[in-house]
Image (cartoon, rainbow, N blue to C red; front, side, top):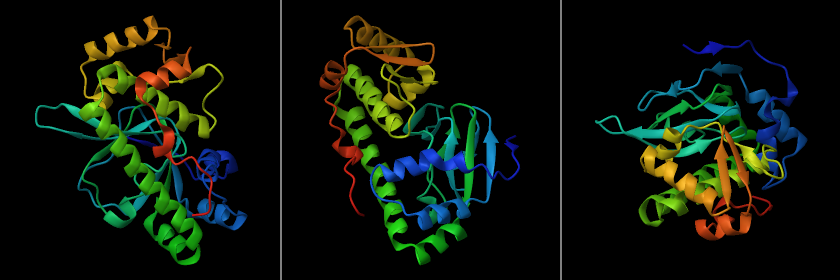
Length: 251
């Protein structure tokens, strides 16, 4: 079971979420206060904990504060396809505000702290803060853009390009929220997790990691990504960050 924390007053809790929003648009002090006021509680979940079940009725959305989570679907054989990774600063299920239940599961991949935002609080935001509402609407559209890029990888990219593209994407997304450095970033995922993102076997992922290393582009070892040649990695990945909508403009 999840270990539920007491209500937190730590103002630093949502700084990464605010950084993600402000990378694309202005967020006023009043809007920031509304986001903070919308949080009902913080919860701590262990790794591999399914905190949203497909088809279960939902009355809140979940904001990732620390850790990694994923959306996924599986088939009768038990094979899993991860459809998106979520890092600190992401809403894992903002779309549940309008859908009320999801067609997929959401689980943690590492120990994870989340903020619980009741749908009633989101409804208040839509009524009082139209600009912030548009910014959250943009974020659900951004999730859809990421899904389309992953679909392209699964359907048309080579295994090496798939892995390279995922590393490039994560580097950008983690950089926005201050989770990269000049050499790379932490990647606390298993090869099985990567395989489930890429639609590959563990063995195939291992081979592609070895090839990226031997070609002098990147090394993934002990939960850490070290990038040696960003330009070459992006070329192999055919990575175009346009789908991440990094331009800062009024929404």
